[in-house]
Image 1: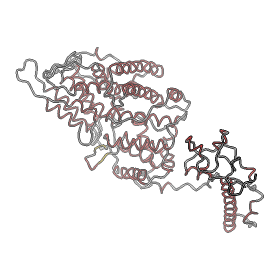
Image 2: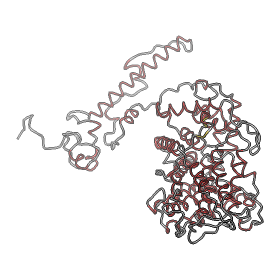
Image 3: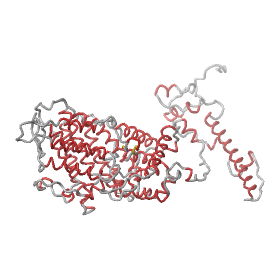
Image 4: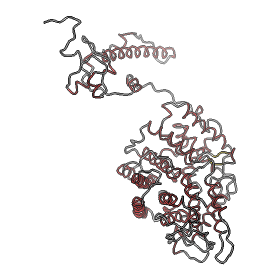
Length: 628
């Protein structure tokens, strides 16, 4: 029986959505989205195409045909205009150009329904991506902008091209191997980097400008900073302003992530505040957040086997993990998989720093496994079993990578370089954090059991400082060093490399000296660095100059003195006083035969106050502020 035009049709729908068709299920074809996709929470193709017409191609096909027609006409008109301009310039002889449909009939086929594949599955894309996909032809090549119009120190007349190349040479010879996120193969040439990324170019120049007039790495008598250093800082700040407040998609590049990483690790120096580094937990945390956003925008997390991307990603993860340990801030990144790291290490284009980064990635994985085991990224809830597993993994890593590096070079100085420096810091942080948690609530006068992590924490703190001695380079065990009162001998080669260290290093090394003195003050260790089973509960006695404790703290003070004595300013100056207070504390404890005790608590407070100022609130130290 025929039905009236207004009666609903219960047979086949004019057209099913793509999702129902692929599943071979009935589609109502009446609602947007269809009822079945709505019920199963699928992305219905009707959301993009609209409802189909019963007597003709779908709305999607009509829209595509219309767009293709518009594009064809625009191409024809653009070709005609270009040829007209060429005729005016006398480049080519005039040729007749037809407009409209006939202009491209011979070269551009007429679109038809047969050319459209309606059976292909629809893929849901964000709206902006859909719009970008409508124009498949690449845009015409534009002339490269003149370098003089870029935002960089050369364009602003702050430095010459030759000076910029010198700053690059300083950076790659002194700083790069300590945090190798750049590429010596492709980014050593200042002019090439400037043409590609003014932001990265400005960041590297600013780091090199720290050491502009360093005539000697230890005994320099000049002001190291470039005379126009403040102008270079202003240029970098302008880049940061544009990236945060006036960003475009073109600003989100691999070079931008590299520039942000460099500005975290070697921040600008503020001359208005007596040349102090910007580095603190708030600055580093905000900058790493921006770097992570840019990295994820460009898909850096899926770095695959591209060594330039893996290199930057490992650097990004290492800084993220460093802040988690130092400032107690949540870590949000994971290192690449072991397979990716191994492929990165043996890649034909791998540079020297890439091998070190592969080792660093393995260390980060150990720390991440420990945080996953206790459910706390700050490791404050680290249990004894997880701690023991982490220390065993650190020891295995040390043995494996030491053997690997000995196979590469007979020079043992690799142990004074990254990633072995990172190994000592990770060991200290992982073991010191639970120590601080265990001792933080107990007054100094209370006798408590020494935490299980104490031996590894003390050894890691000692090793972090001892690595710059001549004994460490010759691989003579520190326990076999002569105990005749002589001080450790400085290894100036290792110290020269340390001069260029990232700003976080000064905090970690000052912390190592402070940690040893605090543990001695609490009675957890004696002057020979031997761990006591229980704390003393009383004021310790004078640590003689011949003891390992005094010698290593004295050596730590010598490191900071040697670094700071030649420069008008160096970031280490900020922590030189901290280490000096640690040494003075040891010298003011009462001798065993003295009746009156000398109160050293004021020096303890000075050490902690210097490390916990308003500008640098490093929470991993606050556990050691205890009631008296």
